[in-house]
Length: 113
Image (cartoon, rainbow, N blue to C red; front, side, top):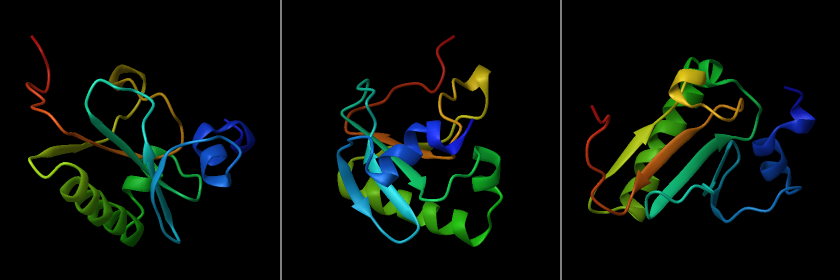
């Protein structure tokens, strides 16, 4: 996907509106448009990276992981999940690497059988 067509790059650049919860030099945190949990945050690097590139980025991934914990503790004090989807079968819908922080209610099982 061309970066010009990337939804998350558009949000980071201010071309696409989003409810921004936190910004810093390398990362952006905003509300996910999905609403199946009370809190659904997306943490994205400002630089367009694939999911695999983000997870293999060393220090950058360590810092976004620490930020995910900070956001989880702030917005979901009773508990949260941090997750990432890789590929079609995992329902990854954006090519721009990102991490989800989900919480605000009892989340239940990871996978229903």
